[in-house]
Image 1 (cartoon, helix red, strand yellow):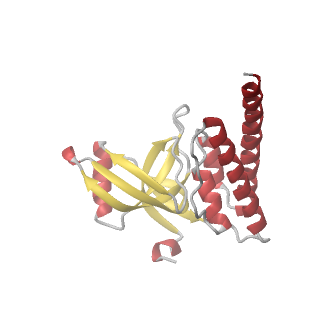
Image 2 (cartoon, rainbow, N blue to C red; image 1 turned 60 degrees about the vertical axis):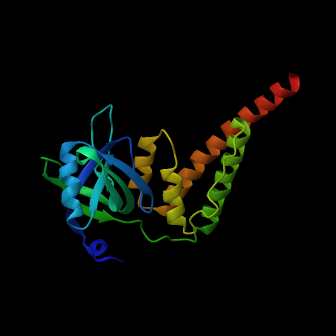
Image 3 (cartoon, helix red, strand yellow; image 1 turned 120 degrees about the vertical axis):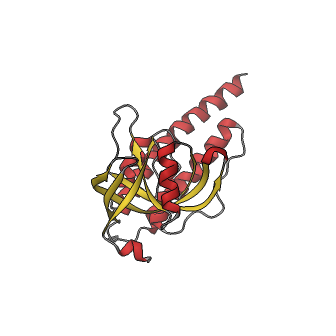
Length: 216
């Protein structure tokens, strides 16, 4: 455990992103071009290379109060002081209050973690992994493309839950809900529900496609 993860509360520069939810252990590439965020990143690079990613609801204009700390792993300076960065999700946090709003937001944040599991989560993780394989197989069949899962999915149930959540598309509000959960089992169970619904939908489309192909 790093020293920063033992600190219960700290100030953290915040980077709001529309409909983007970062999860622990997951990569996030960024292109930094706004002046205030160029200032922020240059400041961060002189310290511990960490900042918070918080999701912005583009319709409501609201900023989530639970986000994920990102660490800059690699960066490249471009013309006009723009930057390309690869960041990696670290701990989750809850914003307690805003310490500063300009030139960029800085929040007083408290780290949050999942509660210790009360049961063996490996069977639930295996169920989610099988559902993933079913969804990928049906998607590949429908699109006639070669779609494959990574050879090695995360072994730990909590890391698998983050991997699945980060790979859901077009459902930022659902991802935010999964990020805010502090129960690994509840997160995996919700993901199993989402994947089951997706699998059933794809299976129905696959039957229709097969039926149509037979008739033609």
